[in-house]
Image (tube, rainbow, N blue to C red):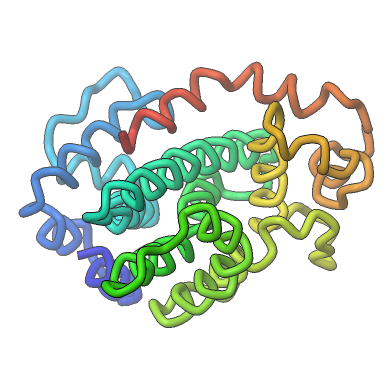
Length: 255
């Protein structure tokens, strides 16, 4: 359904009614569209109670991103309990990362928050086929420790190839590749979608064991652009503190 919707939206004269025809027969997606339309991000005094009005409020692009996000979640599945546990952990991390992307994009007033939300969800999508491949090796039980060590190296190129084959835009295709390239230079003065993902990745490691290996914020090109040269160590933390409600809703939406 997600790919069908993506293809339909490439038609210049697509209508709301045609979009509704595509999504209306999946109850879980319709429920999520209505929930999103009534959420903090989009809510108004008039509540949304049907799929048609939800699509109108979210817009065509917003609807596409929500459906894509739900579809990405459905990919995080393994029958092997240990691998499924890793899948669930990766999914929770993706929710958190997409939440940070949304908040940072909202604060930047440059990058579309909806684009950033989707970028965060697909950032580590390369882990899915790697874990699925590991599950299919019937004659060899994968060493979970080795698999966890290998994932950060395998996920970016696999994710890039996966998004390319699915026909995503060049900018989204490059998200897995550059997400942890802290010193990535876009060549543009304004923040880009990749800059937002890099910043979100960085913040997702705050408080973790990886934090001690992170570079200083004032050395990261994306942070300098977000902060407009006002290099304060508390800047990004204050931004996240003000946006806790939005982060919470973004994290609970797909759970």
